[in-house]
Image (cartoon, rainbow, N blue to C red; front, top):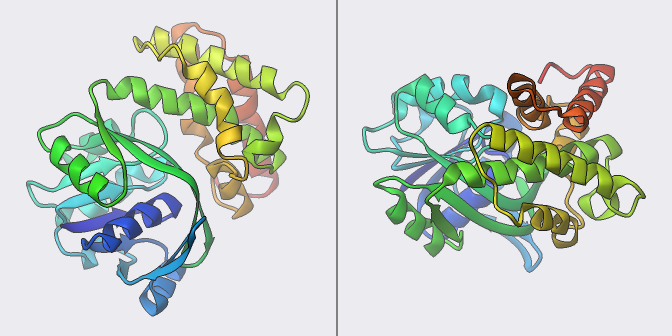
Length: 301
């Protein structure tokens, strides 16, 4: 397949690298420093079992790519519409787009912006960019994708590339479950600048996490989404599964980039206000991250 990765950060580079290793023609679309490193040396993929260099294409703009069979859309939530419009001229009528983004509404926003079907997806992977053209994998690596006419074939191709992929009959439930996971830890990891494993060692942190989860569940129900009964247990288990991983919000702040807090805890706070559901913990975490952004002169998220 011709595969384009729109927004070649840690998630996009990891999945794009695995698809390239499986023989697909992959182009990573990302920032100039990453593109230059990849063009010079290939993509450096570091996992717990070792490091390998993967030769693949890279570009700074979608105008340079061949029309893709599959798009992994991985840009930050605030950039969804603009990146989609830049990609739109390169799409074929049968191009399949997977939105591999945080938040619960990116697929709908992208589809509305470009007038092309978009499959919502949920990513479960711990990755970070360790340097230009260098992605480090910390754990997991599976996908849930929404149901569509193409989903079974895409899931099979991804699974063959060592990206375990399942078609979810109720992707909204899965999106909210992932949002709860992000809301529970992303802001805390960013404010403390600590990996997940260290967070729950501090007295009181688990209660804060539980408060976040309770608020998220109440808002989801107000929006007509029933989250799985095991969401609390699975969320509390994350630090043990990925103890060395810092959140994407922590990584954004460390690099001086705007975070996605408006699309995580901020979304829960906004939807809670709209539905009359109190969300004091999610609102407080949103404000704390925004205060850090303001103090560091980081642009609005």
